[in-house]
Image (tube, rainbow, N blue to C red; front, side, top):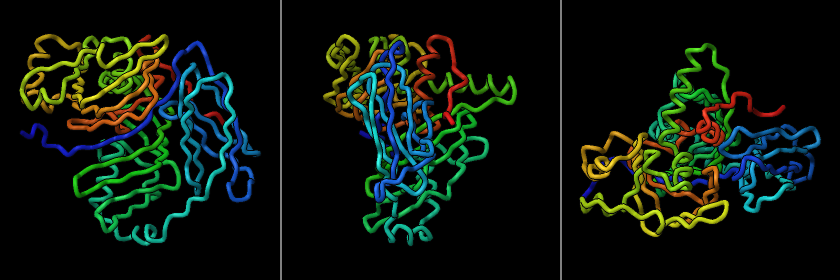
Length: 365
């Protein structure tokens, strides 16, 4: 029995950050040209999914402070060079990370194919990445001409970009730099797989009305976000925070089957291990889940009213603040909680639960 009519979108990504706000880690290094070793100045160095970033100086050196004592992901990008995304698994007070960037040379076949792409390919890419069509009042792409499209003989669409994709999210008030590492869409079975690192910079509101509108939208986005779900998992309070997990077979058998959290969570001192052995459906209600909502969760009348995603079998580590390490793989069936229009910097969730929103973090010149 087919439950969902919308195409499946597979997103594989790593959301890495800190685990304890009272600690911090220093990371320094040097950015050079891999060919001749010369320094690369003004390269972007960012912590993925955050507002923490800087640029290399005239000698190619950089320095960043990452709050917390956990894993994180660092991305280095410069125009004309292949971006590098690196995971730091072992937390410590000081990290030395030097990067030699390779010149990005697109294959001739991709360059030549740029004039042959279809409008439908372009629309598919932007909707998959952004969650909606680009627009001046919604998700505005500042450099769309930097994306290269290539449809190969196997009917697989590939997209690459020599520099970060710049997006203004007019819904939530963020300037986003997205370092795209890979994008592939398989037309044969309608699968999309992409991976990259977003960096957020908060926009300055032009009025109190605009500021309030942004904040309302951010709260709505956060209410069904992956970040909030992870924090709720760590505290074992998913129903209180508006999330419901169902065994996948529940929707097909029309019989409610809820996984016991103690069977999928293994707590440690400062982290929790999430072990998913069979696919689970995650329903994001944005309000506390009641017994009545659980009883009606398998009814088709609910579909279309809130995001539903499928969590693939996987293992990730969740830290105390709800951030996590590992490769998160989901299939989106209804609405999006993982594309750029539905993403906020990880700091928002940390401060939002305390009733605070920081407004002054940005790239350090």
